[in-house]
Image (tube, rainbow, N blue to C red; front, side, top):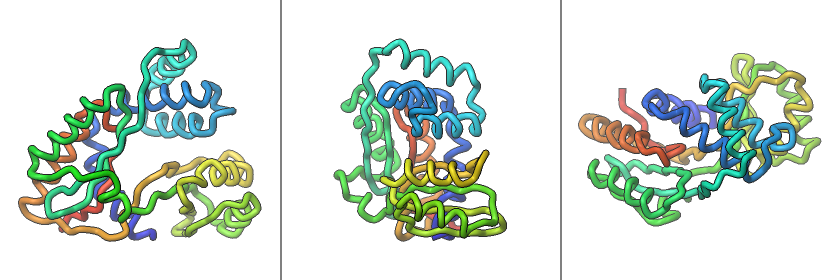
Length: 240
């Protein structure tokens, strides 16, 4: 589990660095989360976690506040979740998660990214069944037993738990995010999550080399430049 997660984190590092519109992506997600679940972080656990992640990504406070104020005012923008799946260079698998107010436009934009990089967009489910959808929570602690006990007491269906060099990482089904996060927050006061995410982790990896690497990076850059794209998951592993 850990190695697969680390591989994906390493392969995604360049993608994260390439996000030139990270502020607007966070702002949009905060707005949608606050509008649907309430603007009070204490009563909206998803919003609280999202704001914490935004701060760690160095999103300015005024960007976060503006998104919350917009949600308080009942903004008239209606965003919906859209997920696209496809195959990139070397037949690697790619999942693209979006928040869009115009699904037809977004689909066209995403499809164009695939087409221009000689990749192909697939049908819903063509790729995602080969990924596991996980809650991933990591924090600094050596007390793995206390973490596991807290999760079990909260009836969290833990998939795996690791303790490496004082960093505990918990893997659970994506549906267990709220219970798992709350259980750990209650058990470890002032907990500071190093990783606080719901992610798709590939069951297998596809090694890319040569020209495939160049084309794959172009695909990621093009997708990240799209305002509607929030997250990209893939199973590509770049050959060093």
